[in-house]
Image (cartoon, rainbow, N blue to C red; front, side, top):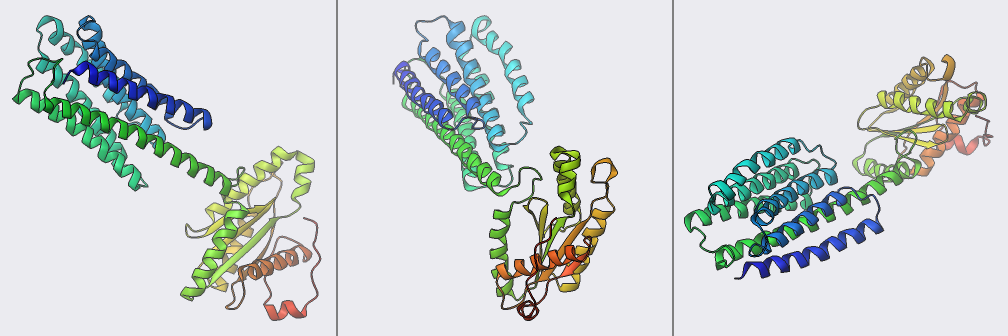
Length: 393
């Protein structure tokens, strides 16, 4: 097999892949890791073109610069993978140091004591180490997924191909680098396929991460970092059905900050936003990991307590009320209080009915003077009682 033809075909394919990456970046600006991936593809293109010009270009370009660009492309693949996953590239400094330490012996085996076999070990050995580091990064990532594990397997396969090239050239020393035999050609094509698979895998992961981030943004309140009302309502319906099927109790606490509008009017909306952030922090500290906490709207928060009895729900609500009252969450040490409504799900009611009982109890707390906890009335009591009028917050 005439090696330059293989390299030129490789470069043409990489050109199309690079154009595809550019188009993806135009459609989805800021896609994490894709810019670094594009740099890796460009470095690989430079490497294969220079290697393909071995017969016509000085050795500095085809050997040192060409193989150096190839190793650097592998390091960029590692960095792109870390950025897509959102992980810290812990091995990056070590890989760069390895790359720099590899240059002096590479120069020595090129001009002072020429040895093709030594250069093969120096180049492919380093690429195998970098690919292994990328595979370790992928396999150690949590949470894992089939896509992440498959990409990790590709990287381990790439490391194996590079090591196989070292072994094959040691057992059967190359005679003519330009005219490759079928074994070396198969290894070259194998590495080409694995590299394209790696590029596609990283692009797929980047798109999946972007979609997950968009979904998370749609479910999260941007000010407090808590779940928003839409996300809470979805969770409530699922948990309601699960609790009913399992025969478990479930409690809801709805709380609203008292006279919050006066804080915005007196101190400004920036101060009001800071109060909401501090209150959300207090609520997070006062809840269990299994509880579901959300900003329900404005200065209103809601808490779902899984497997909680009435007395437990009442105790949590009272503890939250006291922690807010005793905090210094307000501007200029202004005391913040909250009114709370609570209820435990009844066997025959719906999720909407449960929230409605909490809402009625919340307004009862405000009508009774604020800064207190009120238990939601049962359906029998609600049916016989006149409707409560909304009180100003």
